Image 1 (cartoon, one colour):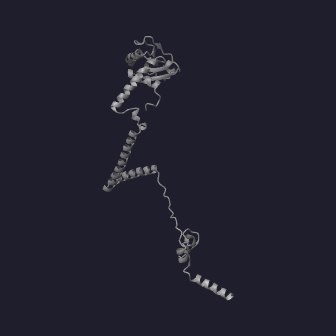
Image 2 (cartoon, rainbow, N blue to C red; image 1 turned 90 degrees about the vertical axis):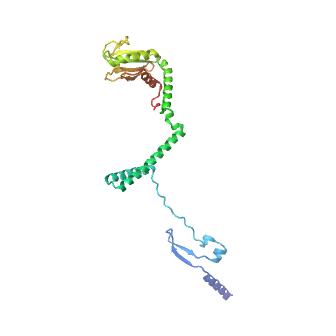
Length: 273
């Protein structure tokens, strides 16, 4: 019986040695040392299809890719500007046909890029009314005319009501030629909208247009008009808040006076621009 077992063991060993299986040591691509590769075995790999875990198939390696950092748009634009300046300087310092041509071609490319940007910008404004400022302040002749007419209508409706709250300090001098021209203009606005005007003489002289004048005793500086004592000068005074609002200096037309009063009292700063 012992002899028979030894013969079976030898037969099994011989069969294993006769199998077309070899061990090979090769460098591991992942740097782990060595890896053992087994050649394909017909019984285990083909008939039983044991697959990767029995070294019938070599595991597929996932290719490693190194992400290349992308330059920011600002860096790219700066590079374009730098290249354009370099080509321009080279064309000026070394004006060969090749250098000048390179500069002109590159410049033309950037002009085309700029034209494309301007075109897309305009199209975006057309399609999004929230971006189109010309809807608030038209720039076309027809649109501007309509906007001005609308503003004048709003102004005229408000001006009569403003006289109930606001008054005007008018600083003049009897020796001022500009004051002689401006006084009748201011008087016409006062009569039209009922504004009360307090004329203040800077030199003590009278006014033919505003006979009920008073002589300046420091009102000019106290109302925030500075120390230059420029005349003619207008100051709008709020009787509710007791705050003065300088309107302007020099000769103003009726429309200018009314526009400034309307804008100072009715229009928020920055809304028209």
